[in-house]
Image 1 (cartoon, rainbow, N blue to C red):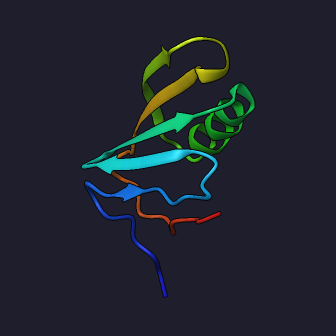
Image 2 (cartoon, rainbow, N blue to C red):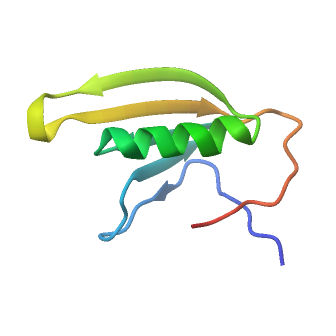
Amino acid sequence: MEKKVKSEAVYNHWDNMIYVRTNGDTIHIICHKEEQMDAVNERFHGSGNELIGYEEWDEDEDKKWIMTWKVPQEFNGEIQYN
């Protein structure tokens, strides 16, 4: 059975390491550690997605990294969940 990611959905639970939200053909990810951002970049870029936005929020221990990815129109692969 193939799982589909829904558009305009928030995939966030109390125990998630990162915040994930979809909006049409874009995926917004908020990382709490720089190492998380590196792992997300490797996974998303490696699967053909395009990084179209990057922001840093706050400072010191409250710092967050916001990444916006565009899913290619021709994407028809199986969604992988961690």
